[in-house]
Amino acid sequence: MDKILVHGGPRLSGSVRISGSKNSALPILAATLLTREQCVIHHVPDLSDVHYMLQILTHLGAEVERASGTVTVQAGKITTNAPYDIVRKMRASVCVLGPLLSRAKEATVSLPGGCVIGDRPIDLHLKGFESLGASYRVEAGNVKVFASRLNGAVCNLRGKFGSTVLGTDNVMMAAVLAEGTTVIEGAAAEPEVVDLANFLNAMGAKVEGAGTRRIIVEGVAELHGAEHAVIPDRIEAGTFLVAAAISGDQVTLQRVAPSHLQSVIDALRKAGFLIHTTETSLTLHGNGASKSLELATEPYPGFPTDMQAQMCALFSRTDGISVITENVFPQRFMHVSELKRMGAAIQLEGATAVIQGVERLSGAPVMASDLRASAALVLAGLQADGVTEVNRVYHIDRGYEQIDEKLNALGAQIERVKA
Ligand code: EPZ
Image (tube, rainbow, N blue to C red):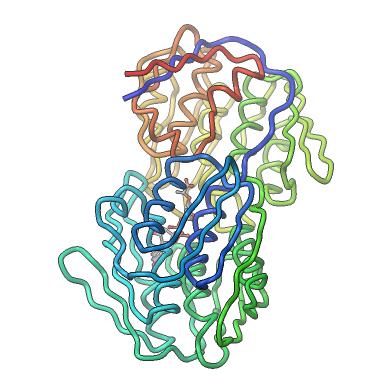
């Protein structure tokens, strides 16, 4: 397994181009199953999670071609059983359920197990499918969803941790070919949900209200092929903003949508950083002096759970006491024990991390766990004395396109060691 060595200390400056959104590309690629016509998707990032999704589409019978950032898919004839050995590697595979249910009135996907950020149930997805007239059964670790027909209905997808992103995506995709109108209350409002709705409408669907808690889908007879460009990755952008806050002089992010990460910009401004925005770029002026903050993660437009670990890395060396409460995935603190091995002073109290800023962090061999925790360890390494060795770097490659090369282009000193 590859590892990366992060040399602490260099200042970052310059500009970096942000890739297309992983969490938008994955459901949009799944949505190409809704038509037998050809779809062309641009700005698809080169990530292992995307590779897994393309493998699943191919296994299901679609013709898939990739030419740098553009993916062409034609799902002429399809089967309906997603392969366990790929699905188990990526929870997001669950978002093929909705399109397969729409297209073929049945779908079988292995149940996504838990993962390091906590339990990953799909009860709200299944509740939405049942509202549309589908049934499901769980057997041998798989969930099979099936329906003789799908009828528009009103459903509420709000769970005890708030809205569900992939649940909203799945039910939206199950509703686009249903008979009649579907109302999804308690919908997720993430920009990636809006991007999927825009792609579905480009295919001839009738989806309104995406980006609000109430999405209305009027079923149509069939969908046609479409061409679409995926939105920029707001979490990659946020991650690079924190890298600039930690060790940057002046860093500019190109091809971003500042409005998609407003809560992150607001938090970093409150921490004392100067951030300049244009329509498609963000510039952070690092001045070294971060102020401690109290933050809580919430569904969009609140502060994103996918940025929680990165903020823990920033606050590890911020004077004073910062507090971060994780309201979406309460167990998502795998990074804390690794940051403490680097000298961070963090106390966990339930779903809250209390971070006492320290003068110095020291480089150490650390273990990557989930995608964002791994990025946080790289960020901590940028500001640590000595070298931080991040093992199991495949976790990072799942969601960040060449993060080491992009950071090195800004002045970081990161080496990738092939195992
Ligand atoms: C999406 O996961 C993202 N993944 C996650 O990003 C992100 O952290 C998450 O949304 C929250 O923003 C993709 O888009 C591929 P949820 P998703 O359903 O849809 C509970 C990353 O790092 N829940 O919004 O799977 C769930 O346990 C990844 O890029 C139920 O209880 O997350 C969690 O506590 C990690 N029942 C909360 O809701 C359900 O049926 C939010 O989960 C579904 C979810």
